[in-house]
Image 1 (spheres, rainbow, N blue to C red):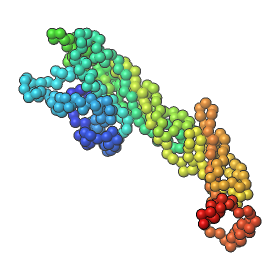
Image 2: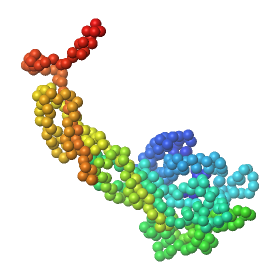
Image 3: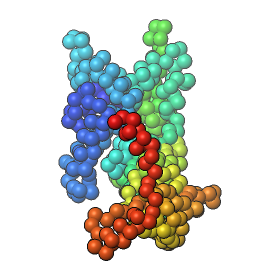
Image 4: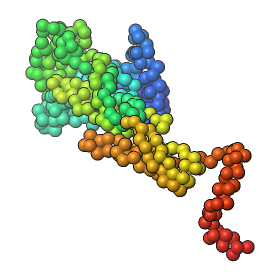
Length: 402
């Protein structure tokens, strides 16, 4: 995406949100568009694909606080649409070509799965001016010179939902991503197979053209090579000379035992490939864990609520309970009250280093809503034979109050 696109495109309108929209509102609007327009749901629909890319492009800028601030500042300073070809800034003067100011700041664009970060080589507002006016040093040592070298690829983020048992025990799952990547036909050079890019003769391969304007050294990206430093005479038919295409790739991701809901896993070098031989970005996987119908989790401990009868609570019992590794038996001592916690050691989350949590079983004494005549007689006999509950302090307080 070229920098002048930041002036010509209304990203808020693309996502259908107000300029004052919160980050959550922007995310919600993008996710709805991504679901409706995703290429997998609209095979062969070029219009939907273009709208999907436009929404991804807008989200990449507006979801990033820094990029959004620079975008708003740029459009506020120059005015939206002020840099259309042929427009007259300030209402007078000669015809104005946006390439006169922004030359060839460009990057690769692409689209991946909904919720994932996208790579659109957007140029920051401050970077634009630092690339135009380089104080005395020309193009050799300024920020623009650094950008012409190898560039690290963008990080990619996606989301995966795991079953409860998968999260506790760990698992390996295939993950399919749609992200920009190097063209296999030209191996990222943008040149037709059998040919190679050549150094730009105008800028001598530097990517920048410098000239002196009085006391200023004025530098701008070379228009012939658009700042890349190289020229492709015969473009690759697959990527049309861009060197990159949107790819579908599948990678196996190992989720360690004990991964928690909301945890973010970083896979180094599995993001988007870099430019001009730069290193690849990283892949971040946001983990969601489905609740289990029986077990809960507290840190490395698993939790389980088990009902017991009144007689089991009074007399005690051996209680057989499930775990993720098979059933175990716990001893319920006589006189156990409702809510008491029993512990099965080592039956919780097993960590890689060998440490493990426990299974915490909470007993819940179940009181029957109705009993048979025989059970009622037995309970009445039981009540006569057992001491009453200790309510002496309560009785004393009521006597004083009365």
